[in-house]
Length: 488
Image: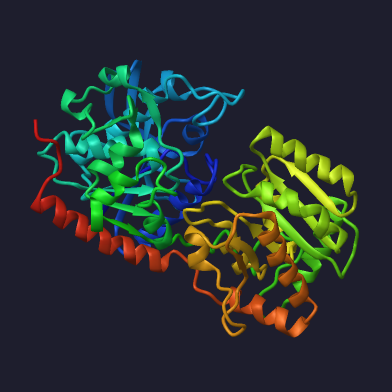
């Protein structure tokens, strides 16, 4: 089966969140399972600089506001998977992030930038770009790639099936309705049955409406987004897709996240050699200027600093927990108010609270390995990778019972516990969960049992890869039976 993954980012070349980790790890896992897998990425500077042995497949010419557009084919560094790159200097070669300028403002031409990505994917699927390779399935990730599903639906002759994965429904790719002409699509797509969404255009809706199959990154999140509370205004569209929507849990790249082989941590360890984790703990305290307190519960947060991630709950509970002996180590960037609030907490509690604004991959590994517990108190969480890293590193997660957090962390009876789960999105509920962890840590044998139970879980991409291969087969059958599209 030939599968094309379409995404805006991939680790380690371009990363703003967990999406990049998924697009880096799932395609190689599918290849190992026997699929013929390629990626399609935008020609951002970091991608163009890293892709190896790139050659021109087709000179596309002028489109989507760019004078020169080429489709390149090269190899991903490390995995050596084939990768197509859309080289459009006018749209992609610029400083800043993939979606925003350095000042945090969205690029004003994002509609064109990511419509082009989906348009090229659809032409590859239609045997109109690379005659040497035509995918059976196009797997589009998040709103940036969602237009691939609409462009495929707008060309009924295309045989390839489309699969669309929602990594975070909150980010929808909304644009002014009057810009629809820039997409080059039939006008019938610009209706409530198509991309129109409350007077705007929604790329997210394009994926949800026109993909043959829709997935989310956990079974619980797939159920949640069909409700008014978590549906972000698109729950009706999702309910309308019925059984076409399913959830497949993410895995983790165990070549990157393994305490037994991680070069970024102070001392490597595994479930049979937990002394190395103690060395990582001491090293983390020293590196962050925390007191060398062996009795403290050392809690870390490695996250975007946003209200969605529940970090305001952490801030509210922090003073009482610090007074009771808990240490905090925080790394992240996000909402300015939360950044300032965490920095003020560090100033108010020297030696007990350490905060690093920004993201450093090496430090993230050290913080996961060196902590006693890792907090993911999200208001909603499609899957979450941080808690999976915590489990793998023997760092029990403290999580809210939502989405993928509910699917991956167990806090039932003592015989099955892998972490600490709370329900209400309140500081008190978070504080109570942390205090339960603090109490259990005093029983060394019981604590190590919880650590080892988490480390023993199967968290690789092998299982999810098999689930996706089965879904691709279903999508191909659905496409063959009833090609998707709009009736004029």
